[in-house]
View 1 (spheres, rainbow, N blue to C red):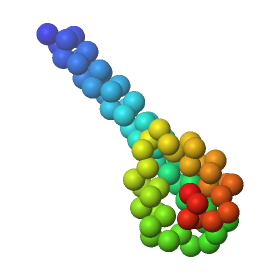
View 2 (cartoon, helix red, strand yellow; view 1 turned 90 degrees about the horizontal axis):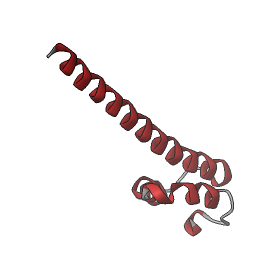
View 3 (cartoon, rainbow, N blue to C red; view 1 turned 120 degrees about the horizontal axis):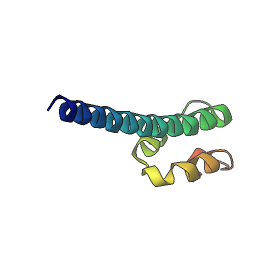
Length: 76
């Protein structure tokens, strides 16, 4: 019984660790987009920040690249 409980605890901890890593990766990508845009254009408009925050996870890598190449924040 104690072994089974320990196994469940370990599985829960591992699942929590994986979820935390994934959330950290998404947060880091969003911040990378903001950093690139701020370095190129200065202060970000609130609308751009909302767009970044709402972007689907599967689009974040593309947005990082676009942040470095667009002519204007509006083109993001």
